[in-house]
Image (cartoon, rainbow, N blue to C red; front, top):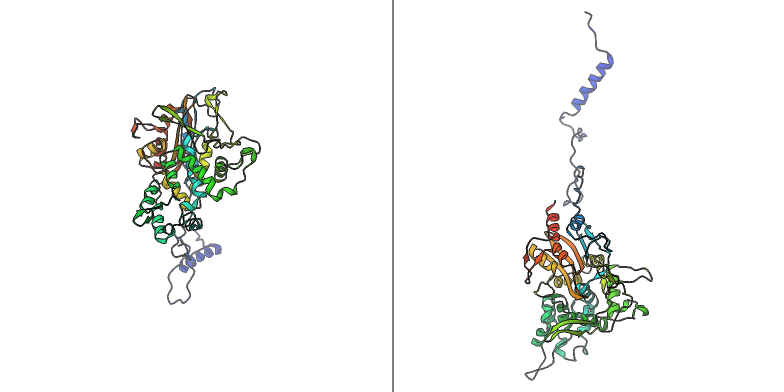
Length: 445
């Protein structure tokens, strides 16, 4: 058989492959650094020596879809197809739950329906005072310095404007839990003349009322704080109150601040939500229920005239309404507030958990879960029914959630949401829907 010789093109290909192999081999006595052979490259060094080296891009895993928590809640709450409420719940209630870290809504049920809030508005009233009245609680502010050193405010007593007294006072009020004892502090540091007790510094007694408003849910203290803030704190002057709303007063100015802080806007001519009045309260006296007239009696915001319809019956309506979303906007703004001192002081008071009327569902829930609630509840009787509300932030396993519930005459559904508790705030029976949600949600990666 005749032997076949390789063709010239074939020899050229073989020669090229041999050169490629030798070019990657180590060489001796070469001065210049050769271009390395193709291989998996090490990322170049960062200009920042502490920066994490750049890694090759990897495919992002598709996020696991969340369970439909809203539907789970609705499946467990009584329904009525004829209900006037958007979610067709049989009871007057709204629920809003939001993940602050992931900026994600988890549950929204009737969240834009106006309902009565009872004492839950005292959380915003706290932030209103802190934002407006720094001269009474913030020693780092210029307002404090001016007020503290004012001889007239200090009763022309040198001791009350002294550096030693200011240092003691500053240390005391830097812990908001001390505010309830400001009277005892002032008595301890009262003026002494010729060995006899003299005047007491009363300039900061409002702090005891602020504490009582939140930690003890005192209605009398709340009225006094609203009135005090309006009359003594200059920041109220930034709001223009329309004459048809009642002009500037303790109620209209608080509402104007709240809407500005929470970024709640209304179209011209539409009813506004908020505090319509804070006139009287009913308290149990020696001879039964007694009506107590508050210091804000007679002051109204005629523009906060958005009512709620009780049990879907237009014959029964009520003022003093907000929506669950309104409370969400407030607590979201407080959580993200740039003024760290106002934010942290508010949180320090909102997390106080004393036995009594201020120990609401969120406080009980947080305690049973070993979580922390920065919240304010509300409870009141109205027209043969009960208002039960709660709003605030729950911190659990490194995550922060806004939880808001508003309801009228819905004790059963509230127990479904939160679980049941005895008079001391201890859980009785199975956990509620909200605890189940938070535990499942924080357990997922």
